[in-house]
Image 1 (cartoon, rainbow, N blue to C red):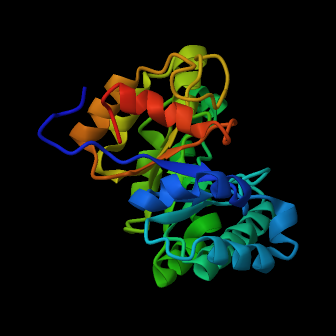
Image 2: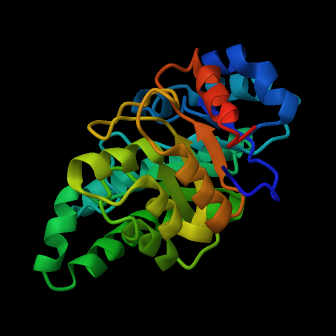
Length: 276
């Protein structure tokens, strides 16, 4: 259970515009945090994304909660050695921020550059950790400046990360309030079960006050399942205790494959007395 002296955290959701329509009353009644996931695809960003942004503004009329988007990530490494690849990634980051500005999103999720291979091998090479951070800056510095200008925060989500501290160090290296940390509970649980990483609550503890965003999904420790909370083996009481102890109101967004049935996962966490 969470600390009974504190109000329970309010759950939000990561949805497409289509599934937002199914959960609109639930989101709007409490002005729950919302993350739109329509704008992370290359074909959208290279196409008529402005029409989709117009549709988002229409769908969000009357919404006053905290709005974010999942930024572009497919085949977009944040710390590539090749400067031409970095240029492509930087352009996609700029396009994601164009979307944020167009719809009033104050947060954009981007993916950690750290891999399982990195965990075992970075320290085989002198200054490899520092060089990875340097390459990430070469990729992201323009996006960080733009994010500051438009009032959007970039949050770095764990993917393969086995060391929960590495991307916290990366976020801090920008020395900017607009670069913070994201946690995906299912990714962390996969890393714990399959690669020997710490349990999910230790990822929360490692991020501490820098944790600004959480993707809530259940898994079995074997793969990235994106199951509804309650369908896997994530230790939810420990996760929510850690959030209450170490963090300051991160956005708690249920991100699952079954977006239609998302409320069942929310009801599971509510039934455990962990959230509203």
